Length: 217
Image 1 (cartoon, rainbow, N blue to C red):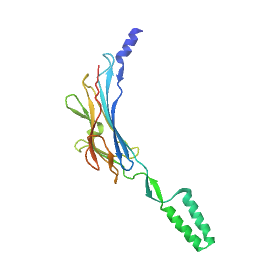
Image 2: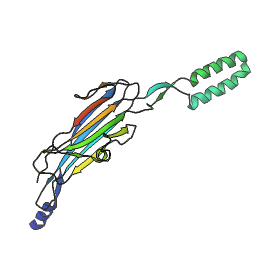
Image 3: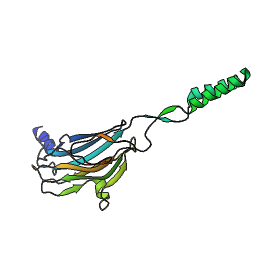
């Protein structure tokens, strides 16, 4: 029984929890964006468990506040107004004109709408920083080499993330991930707050890093 347990332990690979840093961007009209920059290193038990590995990733996500904008009235309110105006004809022209005036006002009232053009993630590059100064690019970054980084509109539910993995990694040395970006707010909005070290306006350029992780044997 002891021999069986020893064999199972020798084949077991334990992945350390991902180390992440969250960066926050807040717009002056309600836009809120977060960017998680992560790294994780594998820890192993036993000599047969495989090679050390380091994973890295970035996950930018934005949420938008509903804004009041002129638009057509809909639903039961508009239908009720139309029926009321038809009925008002029996009461004379004055009543009918008054009803039409109210209906026009209802039809152009402000209605909640979500921002049409979302924040723009531009020149996005995710790299794993190795102990010897070599940068290992993420999948999206690798695909956009020569273009200066990838671009993505941060719409609701849009996937603008990037991931990568280095295997084998050198054990007992530190690795971290770096995500360089230019982030533009929706048109007409400005960033009221951005992470320390970011510069520029209305789009801001940033270099965001994860905590350091160390793969072990």
